[in-house]
Amino acid sequence: MPNVSPSGPPMAASPLTRAVLEIDEYASGLGWDQPARLFALVDTAHLRSHEPGLAAQLGLDADEAAAPLTPIEQDEIPAGTPLDEFLATIAWPDAVAGCALTVERQMLPPSAESSVPAGLDDKALTKWVSSHPDRQEVRMTVGVLRDGTRESALRLREKDSPKEVLTGSALVPGLAEALAATFEA
Image 1 (cartoon, helix red, strand yellow):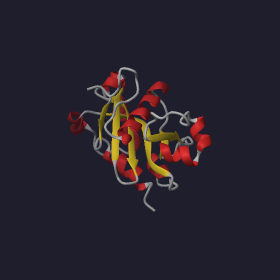
Image 2: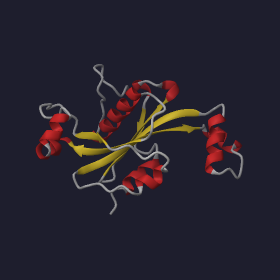
Image 3: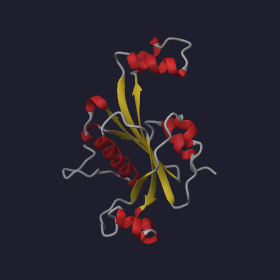
Image 4: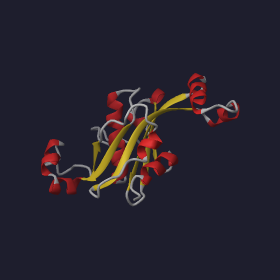
């Protein structure tokens, strides 16, 4: 079953899945080779009642059919800062129900794992993966809520279509853990 309705917006079983697919669609519209992007996920009804001006700017003031969660893109992640180090500096205000991140990476099939040369540092491993003939470029969008709920969307560059987006709660567990840690205080 496709992830989009004939008219375009994502169909999803949960508000978090819908938000993750909305962010995936947004990132897709920007094209590939983009930097990582961080989003706060806020309760749309709360946003309308407590921040009507912002809700109006986002076009949510009169839209009764709006999604339950509204993604709000945050400032750009500083270039050259490792993602894990950056995420360790994040603390969200109480009004933020969750967060999401979209990031592009290269991956190899499990069959290539046995051919990875021993002793490579991160830079050498990245170079080796980027030159491997079986590598695939993937955009991962991962979202988490304060209550621990998680969702991910994966889009392969070679199958860049909304109908080819894979979703699931455990697709990118390490990134989901890092995002969940931004709510621990």
